[in-house]
Length: 564
Image (cartoon, rainbow, N blue to C red; front, side, top):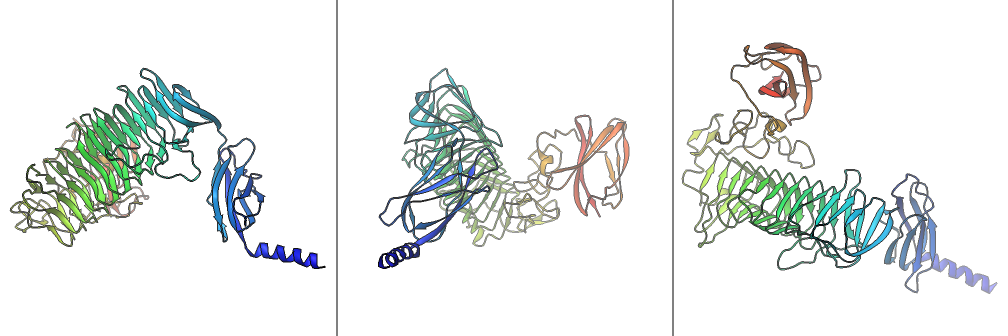
């Protein structure tokens, strides 16, 4: 009887110092996730071996004695996943785990040829694509670095992922950090391409600001994610040429570090959560483009520029400085800059002339709109919209005539001598998760209020700020041959809209867009005509819409109408 009582006491004691552990384990090529085995192997003396299996939805639970464990996830036909030295002292839900069905291939040294989908390539030493050779990587391939190793492309690297199956360059550790492996280096003078890829968890901090992806040759990077580095996401050096479009770069020290004589095209990217600077432009070719990026949550600068470049149509917010002009005379045009400490800051260096041109930007809700001290101040401040910069639109070091209201602009908005206006920009939304983010409302004083010398394809005056009120209609694909004698009436309208041109400009289709430039309707006529009466669709709610009148692929006219 004493032995039975002692056994019961031990059991009760064990379970009184135990935890409910739950989680989910998925399989990458099926929707049935049952019968994966999760084993809790003791590391500390207090731990007790435990094991459970997953259900069809991937859920599992186990009662585990408090202690330190190695937790192993296993299923036949899949790679094993293991969490090492995991401390359990209370009820816990483990992070989701997905087991890979890829075959495991070990690689080091020279590599080339085709890396095929269905494989994981574990890098056990530095790997090199030799000059004159090509390494092609198919969609869905994983490249896992087993130490502080690099992939160096002296030849050509072609990483061809897809929107449904990204290529991944990552750490082989089960609990990765932001410095587990070294980097990808592009040295080839041929053009390497990386598309729909994830590059993460590499590159220790260094004094030269060399990044997780370092470009000394030529690279086109599209539709990819670069994240979790102790240094830059991307660095461009020497004579490197780089085109970077439609990517996300986040959680690094810098997004970009640009120091090259080559051409750099950084366009349509989202760059955020960097501990120093989003885009650091030191030197590059005068032909370089820095346009249409969204940069935010950078501790120091969203963009720092040290040269005479055009910084155009970027949205910059929630950072120390929106645009920090360190040296030289950049052209800062049609940006939207808000909710930073300084909207635009001009570095005081007596030995280098620093005089930016600041034209047709929205600068709102910062501490200072434009901050400059000492020797240098902007060469030009014109056609901008300032609003609610709570320490001031400038700090008394702006060109004479900037600030005092002495006239009105073409929209009859009170303005200074350079047609800067000081009113609410009237955004549709300042929520970056919404499609209408930083889009101008139809009543915005920024519409048709920018610098008339800035050309637009549809012949209208440019709007102030990064986003045109007409949305996609400002894209270069709409090359306009607009004529002046098109009649569109009545406008506003509630039922019918008539389109009339002269006999020299017939049309065979009319396209309609919402204010964000989204295509919502199209009329296709049987033959070209110079007059058409359209019954406004009941699907059109009250508001402002855009139209484009076309004949074949040629644009005859474009404009706006109001549905009452």
